[in-house]
Image (cartoon, rainbow, N blue to C red; front, side, top):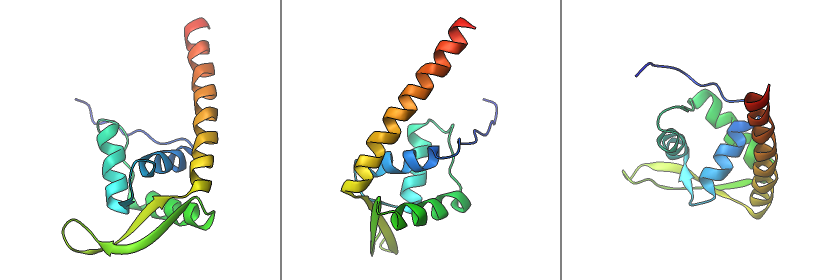
Length: 110
């Protein structure tokens, strides 16, 4: 399999993080690993993108965090989706679905 890197569109990372946290709280590494796993290794989120995004989402009130022990008993910051974050995720998901359907129509009919 070719080693191709997929860059995320501006704003897409926020939506993926919010969606990942909609099922359970996770620490930063866990968020990154889950996105990679679900995308079957197509999407890889590096720390240089992930942690600024987490900081931004937390400052907007879309996620909250607290320190706790990770599965390997190390101290880690765990993030969870807030109600405000769920509302934002709903809006972003609807917009993404509208946009991707429009792109699909162009690809099929141009």
